[in-house]
Amino acid sequence: MDFHFEVLKTDPTGARLGRLTTPHGVIDTPAFMPVGTAGTVKGLTQQVLTELGVQILLGNTYHLYLRPGHERIRLLGGLHKFMSWPGAILTDSGGFQVFSLADLRKITDDGVVFRSHLDGSEHFLTPEKSIEIQQALGSDIAMVFDECIEYPADRSRAAGAVKRTTEWARRCREQFRTNADAATNSGQALFAIVQGGAHADLRRDSARHLVFLDFPGYAVGGIAVGEPHALSCEMVAVAAGELPKDRPRYVMGVGFPEQIADYVRCGVDMMDCVLPTRNARNGCLFTSTGRVNIGNAIYTDDPRPLDERCSCMVCRTYSRAYLRHLFQANEILASILNSHHNVAFFLDIMGKIRQAIAFGELAEFSSEFQARIEAGES
Ligand SMILES: [Zn+2]
Image (cartoon, rainbow, N blue to C red):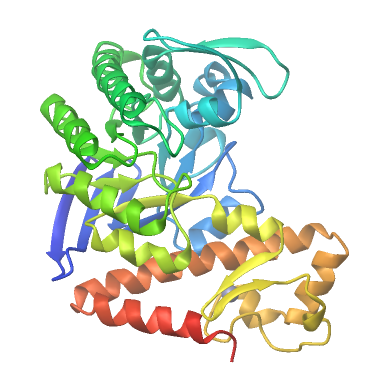
C-alpha cells in the first residue's frame, strides 16, 4: 500500500475526519498514537494493542539507536518484524530525547554531540544519521531531525531554531531520497516539523519554509513544553493555517484527555503522548469524571469499577479496591491493568471524537466531556 491521505469530512469547528493509508494498514484520523519507546508500549502486549484498536504507534529513535541498535534491528528485519507489530509505526527523529534526556555536549549546524543516558558513551547525531537510523528501523512515517527549544525562549533563540530546523529538514529530505535503496520499508514517508516556540510569526515562517520543501505530512513540535494550554492551541492553529489541507498534520507530545478535542479543532489529524502509560505506572488513571489516584486510601473498600462509562477489560473485570491493592503492593499487574485502561480511555476519546466529527457534533461532545470532568466524581 502506498502512503496516501484523504480528508473525508471537515466539521464546522475545523476538525477533520480522515483516512491515512500506510504500508502497514489504514489509520482512521484523528488518531491517537500510544508511545512504544523502546519497541514496546510499556505494560501492553502487541496482541492487546491490536485488541484495543491501535492502528499506529510511536517508536523512539534515540532509545532504539542506543539499545538494541538500529543496525541490529535492520538485520532482524526492521522494527515491525522485530517487535511483531503488524500495524503502522511512526518514529520520531531522536531530537526531542537528545535535547531533553541526554547530556548535551555541543550543538552546531552540523548536528548534536551528546552522551548516552545509559552508559555515558559519546554520540554524534546529525540530520543524515537520524534518517539513516529511521530507514534501518523501517517505520511507516519518519520524522525530520529538528532543534527543540525550551519555553519560554526569546525571539532570537526561537528564530535560530527555526532556521536550523528548516536547514536540517532540507538535509533530511536529501538523505531520505539518496539513501532510499537502503530503507527497510520502501513505502516510508518523511514528515517535517514546524518549530517557532511561542512566536506566531515564526511558526508561520517555519511552516511556509517547510511547505516550500514539500513533505507528505507535517508535524507541529515544541508544543506543551510548559506554556499555557491556550497558547499551545494558538500556536498549533497558526501553524495549521499555513499547512496544505491535503496533508496529514501531527501535533507531537500532547495532551491531557480534556485537551485532545481542542487540538482536533485546530485541524490536527494525529497526536501522541506518553501520559496514558507513564501516568498509569504512577497510579494516575484518567476517567470520564476526571483523574483518579488509585493509591488513595478512599478506594481501599470501593467495589465499583474504575470508570463506569468505560467498557475496557479492566473496568469490566476489576474493582477500584483490587486496583488499589495491586498498586499499593507494587504488583506488576498494577502497571499492566492501569496502562490497559488509560490507553483504552485515550483511544476511546479519539473514537468518540471521530464519531462526533462524522455527525457534525464535535462542539457538543467537547462541552459534555468538559462538564463531566468539571462535575467530578459522581
Ligand atoms: Zn477502563
